[in-house]
Amino acid sequence: MNHTPSQALVASRLYDQARLGPGGTWACDLATENLTWTDGVYDLFGLTRGSTLKRAMSLDVYQSQSRSEMDRRRADAIRTGKGFALDCQLRTGGSSRWMRLQVGVTYDQGRPVRIFGSKQDITAEKKMWDGLVTLIGNDPLTGLANRRAFDEAARELSRHADGSHGFALVVVTVDEFDAIRSLYDHAGALECLRCIGERLARLFPDAVLVSRIGGCEFALLLRVPGGHTALATMLEGAHRLLARPVPRDRQPIAIGISVGAAFLKSAHQHEPKKLFAEADSALYVAKAAGANRVRVFDGMVAKPIAQSQLQQAAGLRAS
Image 1 (cartoon, one colour):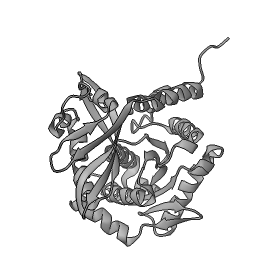
Image 2 (cartoon, rainbow, N blue to C red; image 1 turned 180 degrees about the horizontal axis):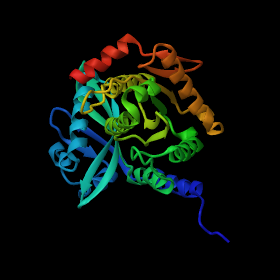
Image 3 (cartoon, helix red, strand yellow; image 1 turned 135 degrees about the vertical axis):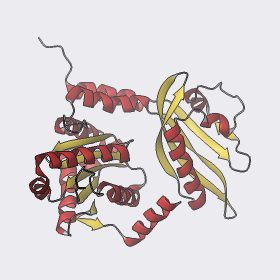
Image 4 (tube, rainbow, N blue to C red; image 1 turned 60 degrees about the horizontal axis):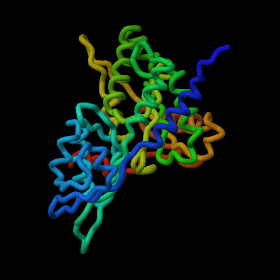
C-alpha cells in the first residue's frame, strides 16, 4: 500500500501551517521616529520585548533590497496618504525570514503625524509555495515553474478563495511569436522566452508563483492588496519593461507583450478554471485591441487602463 501523501494533501498542510504565522501591530510617530510594537513584532525582529525602540534599530534587520523598496513605498504613503502592503525579507540571528508589512497613515489638520499597521511572519507561507514548485517541477528553458506547478498552485489557492482577498492571476504572452521564429530562427525565439522569463522573475520577486505554462505564454499568481487600480497600475508599469527589445549579438529582437489579468473571487472556490478563463478573456481583449497592451477583467468585460491610472503610475515611478 502506498502511504505517500498526495500533493494536494501536502499543500493543504503547508497552507494551514502558513496561516499560523506570528506577528502583531505597530505604530511610528513621524515627529520623533519612536516606534510602538506589540510583543509579536518584537519576536519577529529578534528583539527583547518591551525594549525602547527607534526606527533605525529596526531598519538594520531588513535585507537591503527590501529596505530600499520599503523606504520608497513609505515615503509615497506619507506624501499621498495611501497605505500599502509589502512582503519584506528580514535577517535575524543569522537566518532569513519573510514579513508581510501593512501600512496606514494618520493625518492631523491635513498633516501626516503617524503611520501604523501590522507585521506578520509569512516565512511558512513562502516555504509553502516553494514546496509546491519543488514537488512538481520547473520549466527547463526558463527555470520558472512549469504548467503542472501552476495548475496545482492555482487549484490550491482557489480552495481558500473565501479568505484570500487580493490575489490575482495574470497571463502574459509574446505577440506574433511565429513571426519572431521565422525572422530570427528557433534559437532567437528561445532567447526571447528566456529573456521574458528573467524579466518576469525580476519584476515580480514577491509573486506567489511565476510560471511558463506553454509555448510563448506565462502565468503569474500575485498578491495585490490594493484592488483593481493597484493591479492595473502595477501591470502597466511592468509592461513597459517587459516589452523592451530582447538583446542579441547581431540585432535586438523587437517584441510585443499582451497581458490579461483577473482577480481571485469567492466564486472561484468551486470553479477554479473560471479564474483562468477570465484572465484569458482579458488577454483576448488586449490582443483584439491591437496587442502589446494590458487588460484587467472587470465583471463581463476587460477594461482598458484609464489614462488617470497611467499618469498615476508615471508619477509613482518618478518619485
